[in-house]
Length: 179
Image (cartoon, rainbow, N blue to C red; front, side, top):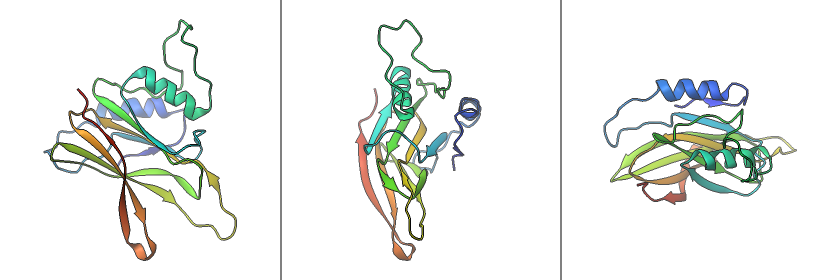
């Protein structure tokens, strides 16, 4: 499964290493995982949402929002990326951002499966939740999933743990195929 990275200091280096060294060709329908997962519980994005990022400009804007930084004015004559922006090759990959909003007792999100069936990709993720005795930890969990860019539509599903060890799958978002 993908490695979970939490330090923005070494994320760009780790991303580059994984993106250039982790590609493997698999048969259609065979399980594969995201190339990289960046996860945590401290996003500044307070509303639950799922997004698909396909351009450097959109990635830089979402990264700034996630970090709580104001958007850059379009009038600034600079490149659209930040020093600590994890680098992604958008000709071969996309970024899926999942934000759970205000919740409690979660360390972030992790990928459970990335599968392809009948011309659709399915990314299943789950929260890394935990229990506390009395007080709860107020958090804003997130997951950035760097996926290979395919011509398939993409469905996001959340795997929810149930008492007794069972789980159920909830559809969260569908994205059409990219051109």
